[in-house]
Amino acid sequence: MPIMTLKEVLADADRRHYGVGAFNVLNVEMLNAIVSAAEEEQAPVILAFAEVHQKYIAMETIAPLMLKVAREATVPVVVHYDHGQQFENIIKIMHYGFTSVMFDGSTLPYEENVRRTQEVVRIARILGVSVEAELGHVGGAEGGPGGEDDPQACYTDVNQAADFVARTGVDALVVAIGTAHGVYRTRPKLDLERLAAIKKRVGIPLVLHGGSGLSDDDFRQAIARGIAKINIFTDMSLAAVDQLKTKLCTCSQGSCDASCADNCLLQRDYSGGLPGDSMEDLVQRVVARVLQELTQKEKAQVQPVQSYPDLILATTAGIKAEVKRKIRLFGSNGKALAFGK
View 1 (cartoon, rainbow, N blue to C red):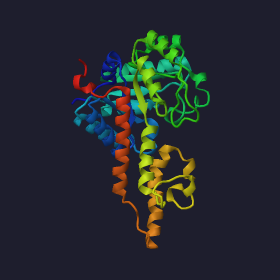
View 2: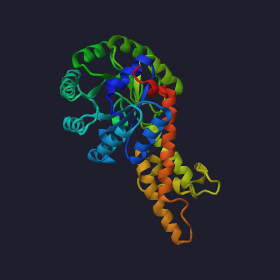
View 3: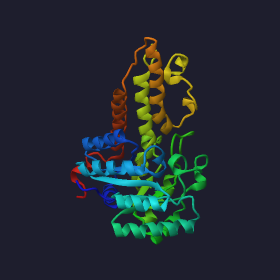
């Protein structure tokens, strides 16, 4: 199936009142898990790569893989560049073949955000690429600093949103209504009235960032008021880590908790401190650290409990299950069967 643009996919979601998951990709395992889940659920899906995730894998490496898998998929797939701030990266990714880009000027003064967004839209139109932008600021993790402790200070202004969309011509708008990227420190409270008012003024599909950690009802209420695209990354990371904990636990009881800190490899405080790591860092580091200690134990006649391929399969399965759960929650399951009709 040909790769689709964000505008095409969200038009169907907006018309039929469901949400499309945008799932961030860091490696081949995540890529395969996401597309496999979407195909099994017969759901349109958005494969996303965030600019800040280049510390894990180069854009030049992951982009061709994402495009190849998207072209071979049997469901509608958008290949999207998330939270792009560097103009040269946005232009490069469009030329690679991505069908959607997000220009994130949310930390800029308003008029500067408008001007830079207009420039990205002008070039994207020539190349047939959709553009997402952000007004207000959803902070934390890939969203950058600010907004985590006091989201209300960065809420999207309703009147400004209408002006922004009219002047820039963006295809989708990220709104700040109380969410934050990464793991929530307190339970988020969404300003659903603000969301409904923005949707009424701008008309175009709206986007919810910082989706991981919201309640199921939060998602349903947001979709009912105009959210058509929902970004998910942290929940996938947590699902992968849970699988690693299950596979690598060395406790006699077979599962980890605070009581086994002295005995279990997963509870140890490695350099930098695993308990204090972000979920993104933990996923990347825990396997290498634990396998290193298991190798040392093997020399003392303690056999490793798992092989690395076992861990790959386990984390892939965990991510896939979480993606399928989100697809069903957002209501996009089965929508590929009659897409655009």
